[in-house]
Length: 279
Image 1 (cartoon, rainbow, N blue to C red):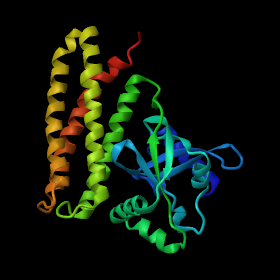
Image 2 (cartoon, rainbow, N blue to C red; image 1 turned 135 degrees about the vertical axis):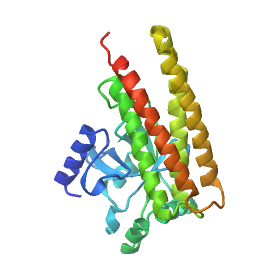
Image 3 (spheres, rainbow, N blue to C red; image 1 turned 60 degrees about the horizontal axis):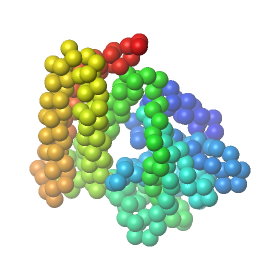
Image 4 (cartoon, rainbow, N blue to C red; image 1 turned 180 degrees about the vertical axis):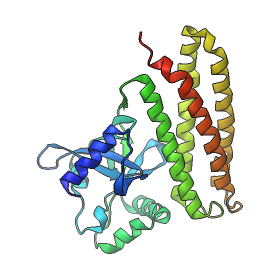
């Protein structure tokens, strides 16, 4: 992509917590900063990604089906350490170029979920690389304040759940969910559970110590965590099932969306003013 077009996306991404307009609106997008293979200079590129198991993400060096690999791929081959910005956090990652059966399986999984990847492969004689990015450092929050950080995390969950709902609706939401869609759902479930565990084990006990009058609010939030965990488990069981009624998984996503939105809105109203209070 032209440098000025890339820069507009980068600026918008950073200014809006990972949200962009135009051709990438609603897409899963990261900013990937690599070290030049020959120059040694740092280069940032907007790149689409796919969730994967084990905490890593996948990036596919399609270059729109062009005859040559994109520059960021060549950079990662020479310098595998890169920086990932996801709109909520920035973190160091280690790149692994996948090969053989693993590359073929994951590319096929991606193409099953989005045939555009297969169309790119059909346009070129090169084998389009699949690269796994694994976190290799402590994430740094991108937000300017604790309250803004909480909202950014919540907004990331909102965007991902909306994407999953859209993908599920397009698939029919029943028998034969695409393998990549299953991974997307399971990764979302795992991330949401991890976030709630951090709140239950750290943020809420902190408020109980310094603001005991919040006890009723925190009790409600914990009960909502339990309710959402039950819905997440139902969704997990559905997407892992070999067969399900058409629309059943989509109905579960709709139910989870409604309850999660209400929970996030309530938590933001109650806690963000306290998180950002002076002193």
